[in-house]
Length: 115
Image 1 (cartoon, rainbow, N blue to C red):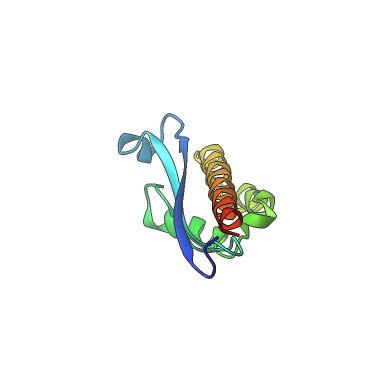
Image 2 (cartoon, helix red, strand yellow):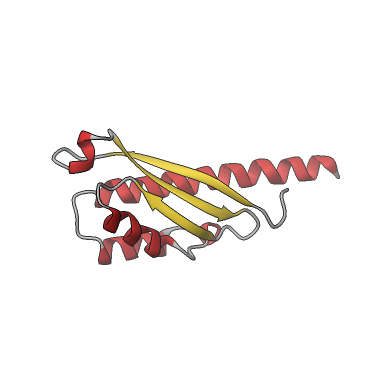
């Protein structure tokens, strides 16, 4: 297992019709730099159309521990984000979380096989 390192991961979801970002992207992507050991999101961004929206989501997700799950982050998105992409943001965050846990499991298996 990697100790004290970060990984860059992405989660994806389809965008709803009628969004500005839909003309550029078919999917919404959330990217995050994550501490592999603790699962903490150090930095995050997404493909919302405006810089303000991308920064807002980044601030909401920063500090989230993927090891603890994304339920609290989802509640924050539901509480503070009021836009058409809400379901896509939640789906992309769940996808990112799933991918993190797959990577974490693979790294643990590699580490255990070396023992």
